[in-house]
Length: 344
Image 1 (cartoon, one colour):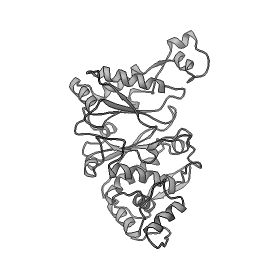
Image 2: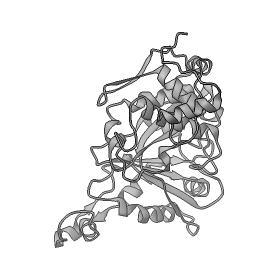
Image 3: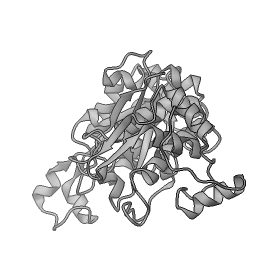
Image 4: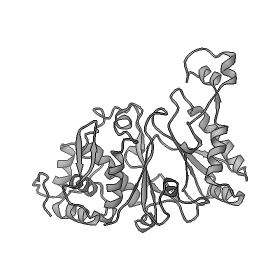
């Protein structure tokens, strides 16, 4: 397998790490030196030739080849068997529906949220449980990090330059989880996108940070969702987010399961109960102008359709915490995209 990337000679591993810092190839954390052997192993695990184009980023006129992705996956600390997940994610980044340029360059500061479904999530030990968005799992930490390094080193999405985020958030280091398909009260999320349960898929979503809320008092779906909706209503701003992810952890999952609530029931309830009077949005300066009598009667929906609420089962079995994740942009902004993960 012939690699075409430029090679650098260093005296030791410490020198290799410092070379990456000097050249701006890291996200601020140390990286693994991408030797030819490691890059080749990554490509072989993905069943990819080095010059295979995984994505073409139209606004940047950048071709993202498998070799470049493999290099950054090595640097991120990935195992070779993670490569099919990373490759599918990079393919999804180039989908027009996702609209890479907007969320990648906006001052809003969205990150690439990744949801992995199918047997591969369990085979790779991608965390779907305790400490869901936190540290502790190599797969979650390094798969998401690899995608961010590709954005930085291949596409040129550099903080303060192409990436103009005002605040950013920790998901820009890594934002990768799996769904807890075993305990979920609903069919696996990727089946809502036309995939079979036994297929492997990754969904990407241009997302802000997770907003956690607690409800230990309710034993009904309505009670849990009333708490979620109260927290979410403030997000119904002047642009209207295109989509929201709703991540329900273990104890809340059990409530939906016992009540027999389908995913669609959750979507309909939240859609109807997050509507906000236009007058209220004007009073808190999220819409322009003075509130009128008509504004008091007119309501504003959080998303365009109930289906724009992405309902996911994940998180620890203990505890009464769940979360919602606002998407980036207006209703015409970035949309979530699901791609099949093809094993080599």
